[in-house]
Image (cartoon, rainbow, N blue to C red; front, top):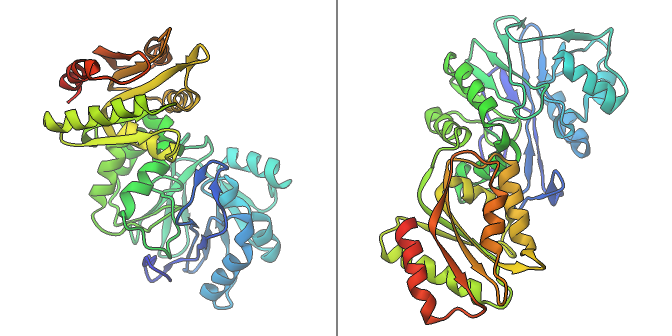
Length: 390
């Protein structure tokens, strides 16, 4: 099976695939350790296939499915989510097994028609919140999860083995056959805030539904099958989706043209640590993965933005970064600013204005303004900002 054991139960079997060819997920997120597209099959009196996989991996997926079927014919294809990385082989499996019934939400069938030209009016079962699908000793109970992170999403709870099929929730970047030295949390956090993070209220609604179920295993559509310490993973999802602080400390994000703003950011990190700040994350927005930077901004309770006035605005990497934060519902944070401008510094004012639509944002009283070079005279300004943001 590879590095991570994807075994679910005796009757619920993993048939997903690992992707080591795609360089950018959704055209923007780097994949240093690949990506997993998870699919499962429930073997019972009736057999249910749980989702398909990305288009380029249909052969491997069908092979995995046939191995588990052992010559039997599946009865149902359950489609929890219509994004093509999970739905692209619907037509293939429906053509291969003419007696197969596809099970999904009404909205998903509309998307199915749009993506693949067929919504299977004679071979479908439309389900909604609270509906069940009995396979024999196993029974699926459907849970609506609109906007986690598409509007058609359904999840399902298998009540015999107490397995929750969570669609994209609890997913992560990374293939399952490659060791991730940082564990589940880092790539799950990057995935969550990049892809799901805008929809915190909807995730909170889902978690309330999940709290009423006895769950032993979580089966997401990306990443590891979660089988132990589920409270840890659910607790992180609760923190992330409520925009709480996960790690005490401060994150600094900077751009620098000639190195002076960088020097100020590095010095500020040093001062913060000397003043007892428990952790300081320093991020160069021009060189580091922007999704990692977004992740850090949501991870800490305090952030400091340092950039230059540039073409009457702010440096492009900083502008892009703030846009990403605000469009992902950035809130409940304290923000400090360092600006640099040789003749007309205005970056701090412009950065602050970009957060006008964000809720529960507090701005530091001290703003550091550099005039070109970072000098010893600026040390006291940094010290005041650090005292406020430590």
